[in-house]
Image (cartoon, rainbow, N blue to C red):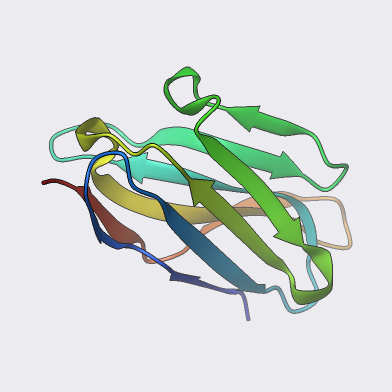
Length: 120
């Protein structure tokens, strides 16, 4: 059974930092990619950062230079280090995993989300 467990959200002042973590239990599936999305109030879900199994990364323009995605492959865990946080970073952050089965079919899985609030 696939399970994504997020941790690390909370309240931080503008300019501060937070580190999100997502631990994945993937059963018999293989990880194609993992990443973080976010959804602010009244906004659509958007990709924040992604990391492929080959090590390629992608970032939203709004977070480039401030956020860094990394992984601990041995623990099937992905981290998102968020620095110089801004009020507009306030959102629910959701962990995503693109998992591939033995037949090559890929499916997206989601965590429950963790709230990040940037406010003074």
